[in-house]
Each structure stands twice: as structure tokens, then as C-alpha cells.
Amino acid sequence: MTNALTLPVLTATDSLEHYSRAIKAYPILTAEEEYALAVKFRKENDLDAARQLIVSHLRLVASIARSFNGYGLPQSDLIQEGNIGLMKAVKRFDPERGVRLVSFAMHWIKAEMHEYIVRNWRMVKIATTKAQRKLFFNLRSMKTGLNTLQPSEVDHIATTLNVKPEDVLEMEARLSGHEISLEGNIDDDSDEHYSPIAYLQDERLEPLEAIQAKQAEFAETTGLSNALQSLDDRSRRVVESRWLQDDGGKTLHELADEFGVSAERIRQIEQKAMQKIKTLMLAHR
Image 1 (cartoon, rainbow, N blue to C red):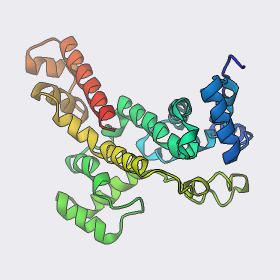
Image 2: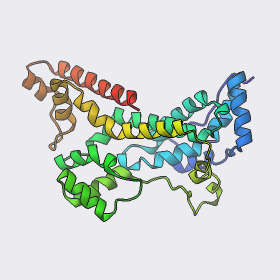
Image 3: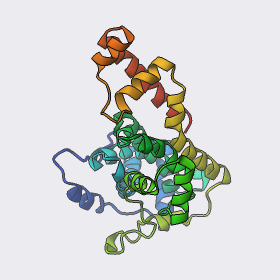
């Protein structure tokens, strides 16, 4: 049995193009191969079997990472976080449940990327005006699908939130980034068998798993707003003043003067509040 797990790593000096070429060299597993490797890893703790399961899905992680382009985060970091989620999925994958690893792994991959986004708060800082903040917290939950908003939907959202249609379109563009194409990249023949549509045709996904996935998606779209509302008045004031102001936010010293405490105390309040927000969002996935 192999006692070391060696995986490709995307370093700071690597280009995304180089990494993409490297991970395309790993073969895509058939359902039978995937099942055999998963059983071997689960029953014998064979790390080489786990490695083969992981590397065969690295292209999936890179594809999902591209869907988060709109958040202003480095693709290399998102890929690394997604790879962590993939490894967690492989560790928990039960081949006897009758679903493909790709269906099981997508939630874990996205969960790690979501957590990374929340940790860095770049996601929140793209909302720099009052209207944008309102759209940031509500737009995704108000969309009826993954497609681009239709004019009637834009008008409805704008009316409901009392904002301009132009603001709705701008925020949609900033949040959506590039969605994953179900058909894959039609200009890249080497990827035609790895496009999501090749896996999502699996009809053996259990109804309970489908419901759980839907609940997790809803929780991600509303969790940040709800988490902010759960803070006490002072903590919420600190977070909003630091991150959600049109003028770029207040400094620690400005807030220290306002509350009559030290700047270090404000930093501690902010750190504790952000940790609580992250914990609440993870708990409601």
C-alpha cells in the first residue's frame, strides 16, 4: 500500500496555462474505474487510489474556479482552495451510494471556495454604494435561474429593491463572473468528455441529496446577510463601519474614539465578529 499522497501543486510561479496543461494529462476515469478505486481507498486506505481519484477531477475544480471570476480573487488561490474541498470529498465519498464522485464533490469544492471568499472579504467590498450593498445581499436569492436576467426580471428586482435597473445589471455582471458551460469549451476537443454535462446526466442522484444541495445553495445566498443581523449592535457597527461604507470605511482609531476604547479593542471586536459570521455561514450550509 502506498504511504504517501503526492499531488500536483499550483505555485505562485506557475501560470494558469501551464497548470491547465498539466492537469489535462491525467486520464478521466470511467464509472467502473472510479468505483474500484473508491472501494480500494475506503477499505484498504490505499493513498494511490485516492490520488488517482483526486487528479482525475482537478479539471473540474479549475472549471468551478472560473465561475468565481467576478469576486476579484486570484484564480490560483481559488483553485487551491477547491482542491482542498476535492480532497475532503474523496475522503468522505461512499461508492456504494450509487452516485458519481463529481456529483458528490461539487458541493465540497464550492464550499471551500465560498469560505475563502468570506475570509478575504473582497466579496463584500465590491458593494461600495448603498444601492450596491442592497443588491449584493439580495440579488442572487431573487434570481429565478442561472441565466442572464431578462428585462422583465431586471425591472421587477429594481422595483422591489427601489434601485435603478442599471444598478441591477451592473451588480449582476460583477457577481456572476463566468458561469460553467454545461457543454464545455467547444473550441477545446480535449475537454469534450470532461464537460459537466457528461456527468450531470447521471440520474442516480438520490432525492435527499438533491434537496440538501438546494438547501445549501440557498443558505450561501442568504447566510452572509443573516449573519450580519445576528451580531450585537456594537459588533455590527464596527463591521459595517470598517467594510460597508461608501467612503472606504473608518479606521480602527476612529472607531476607538467613537466607542471610547483602544484601537486594539476595536480590532478584537472586529476579529471576533468576522469569525462569528464565518461560523454561522458554515453552520447554515
